[in-house]
Amino acid sequence: MGQDLFAIMTSNAEGGEGDAGNTGSWRVERPVINMALCTPAKKQKASCHLCWLYCPDGVISKDLEPEIIMEYCKGCGICAEECPTNAIEMVAESEFVEE
Amino acid sequence: MNVIDSGNVAAATAVKLAKADVIAAYPITPQTPLTEKLSQMIDEGEMDAEYVAVESEHSALAVCIGAASAGVRAFTATSANGLLYMSEQVHWAAGARLPLVMCVVNRGVGAPWTVWNDHQDSISQRDAGWIQIYVKDHQEIMDTTIKAFRLAEEVSIPVMVCYDGYYLSHTYMPYDVPEQEKVDQFLPPYHYKHTLTPEAPENLNSVTMPDTRKDIRGDAAPCYMDIRYNLHDEMIQSIEKFEAIDSAFQEIFERGGNPVVTPYRMDDAEHVVVAMGTLANQFKVVIDRIREESGIKVGVLAINLYRPFPIDYIIKALEGRKGVVVYEKALSYGNQGALFGDVKSALYPCEKRPVIQNHIIGLGGREIKTDTLYETLIASCRKADENSGITDTPNWVGLQTVEPTAAER
Ligand code: SF4
Ligand code: SF4
Image 1 (cartoon, chains in turn green, blue):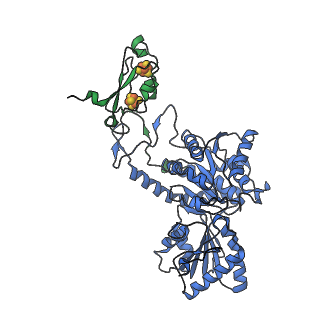
Image 2 (cartoon, protein in one colour; image 1 turned 90 degrees about the vertical axis):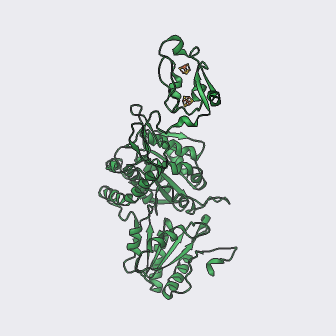
Image 3 (tube, protein in one colour; image 1 turned 60 degrees about the vertical axis):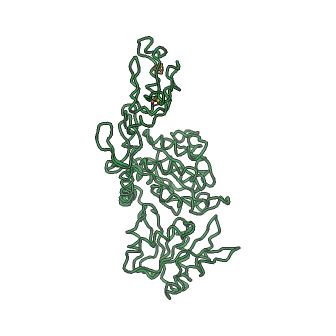
């Protein structure tokens, strides 16, 4: 139907870390995972990974010890909210600033 | 099959024939019987679609946006304040290039409350990036709604089919209901090139920057201004598409023609009335009478496609005429009639510019008497002939408790 000639420009793109720019600079609180409470880390078995699923920026890895890419994590706190074992704590960025 | 039914039922039947998969709408007068009919047809198994009951018009369009993004044909309808309540999503749907169809059953906008007809609701959304088509009778509601799905899907721009509340929505008129087989032949199954699937996840309409930036692969991603230019450019290209779609429709259904503007007795006309919707049809009777009784050569130009605005058609139809009189049921407050302003700007580059006048009429359902049209039109033609007493301010026809001031100065 010739549709390919239309809507040639959109902002629809393959998702992935950094698709919205360096969103890490937006962060005022940083998610910190306590591996002692994180289910896959504790059991050393692939499981849970709800943080990976819910992170709107797709910056949490699906590893046994989930890792967060701080360059893009915008500090929204959704992962901390969703984590069923409360393994993620949102810590003020000021805590990480060196004197 | 010929039936006699209301304009709202004609619209609902068209949506059924177009095999819309998702309907999400919130009832508002005078649109209500349209959504009621759709929900009834779905409930009784006559139509295979999902009816999503929503708590507001904003949600209604949001549901349609989600449905269209996920690969199904979606439809909504509204009126007046309902349209304005969904306004944020109206703009979104256009920017997102989603091929939605919405019927706007035209009604005046509150405050003060009115449930009666004028065009202020959809005119207020003319700059949102939707295609807007104003129809004049029940058959046009039926046919245009079916065409609207094909147009929206071919150009990836949402389409509003606007029809006059009560004048069309609630009156009964005979019209032909097309056969399903023929509609299927005319309207291929829904296809949208950015359909979201679990296999190919995408970020839809993600944030853009003032300048081009790199996507995750390091390629240049389009930026806001360029994406918006593309919408504007492709809207203008849609005029040609609409013509082509109308021709395809004519081949199958043996009716149609003049989808963009409809001329009536224009060949020898020295004066031309420009109007939209039922008002344009009402003028046919008026000018027949004027031609017979006073010999003034006058014709009517109905604007069907209002956005994109068919500038070339307007110039072709109006350049060199003595007078053009724009009658309309909406205005840009503090300025003048919206259509008047558009027609004037279209004619600006012409060498032979007609004298052009504006009448605001029928707001909030104020009765538009054929006699009133007759008298005001003759007076306007005389003014144009003598080229005297022409003002650029709109004349408010039929005010009852205040005197028109600025217009008379
Ligand atoms: S949601 Fe919590 S428990 Fe689950 S993987 Fe993430 S951090 Fe670990
Ligand atoms: S706070 Fe958690 S959910 Fe939010 S962006 Fe960072 S990692 Fe993702």
